[in-house]
Length: 199
Image 1 (cartoon, rainbow, N blue to C red):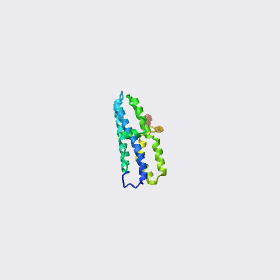
Image 2 (image 1 turned 45 degrees about the horizontal axis):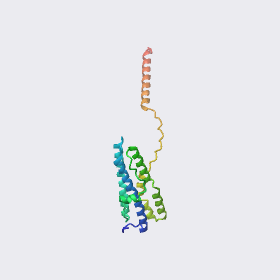
Image 3 (image 1 turned 90 degrees about the vertical axis):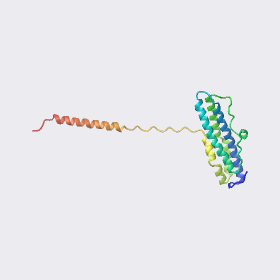
């Protein structure tokens, strides 16, 4: 660990460095899996999926940078090489023999959900937070984990909103009212014409 102006105790920063480097290995692996899908997808949905996987890759890359930079800010060394990621990543191996769109969609969805719902990392974080001081707990709960973890969690289906009550058509009402008024006026005029004139 390097010397730093950060006031979190050295022991706690070392623990946090281990935690973040584990997450970094997962993120680097995830990014390369997205590239694998981007490069190799085929089929009728090629162009849509090709672009989609590239967008996901770019989003993951931003989180890779965020995690690595946080490690360095805390005085650690970001271990972000592909070899280190392959050694420590907890993601399943991406299937290399697939080509069709649906197969890649399934593999990408599995990788994203595994990364977003990574239970060991959250259990480890909770263990650190229970035994840590307030400053360390705040650092572990900093924007890195909520942003990176929750970004790739499955999104629950929104609850169906109740259908709005039917509203009366004020325009049809006003038209009917005008027609009724016009009819009354015509009847009144007709009656006036048929009445005998007084002498």
